[in-house]
Image (cartoon, rainbow, N blue to C red):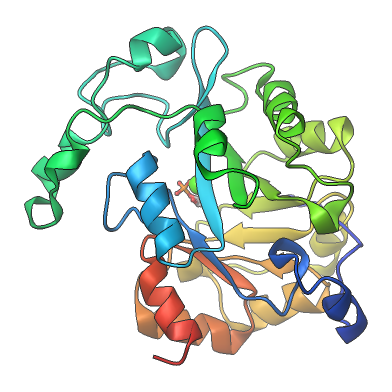
Length: 286
Ligand code: G3P
Ligand code: CA
């Protein structure tokens, strides 16, 4: 795969780690517990209850996938269609926010996972990015993915407008309250051009066991501070190569404690999980 390379600001050096001790996203010694779509193993993904559980379960970041409505509002949803995670049908881009707000984003979970069902999930709404930030505030950290950016012209500009409005970008990479992720290099470069200080994570999709070259790492280092990829595609050598290049590495989506431990042994700097409670246990030796 043609890759890039990135950001030069992070190294594994102890001096830098020490300087960034209170900044999880920038501190390579802080192992990040990323609540994937919230604590989505316990509650309906990308809803306020799921994000709240993620916080309660000690997730360091709330992961938010973004889609954009017909009237240009950024909402939290993984899919381009509303079909899987609401009681509606069709493409997000064909809905206004007002229409999206009429949908039930929780009952599907109760039906699919009766053992985890909670009446409180019935009828809950799809949150906008702004509502999420207003709910969890600037004390929280957000790991935000631009989904399908080719479908949503202007999504990066709108995202940055919101980050600026709520002062989430910080004055530099180290103080940012957000990590911005995407499978789209083009989308990340748009964000980079809008604000070169934003810490960016390049997501990489591998069809086969992953390898990464020096050239790719160099290219990535020019704009990103880290990479994310399926945990099932990597091995210890891959992790070491990324770390030796001074980049963060956050595999997804890791729900099994043994796999969490193996990845930590290999040297990953965090991971996405639907069960931040399990990862918290592992990080505390349980
Ligand atoms: O963003 C990391 C991981 O979430 C990427 O996969 O499909 O769950 O967004 P996906
Ligand atoms: Ca995601």
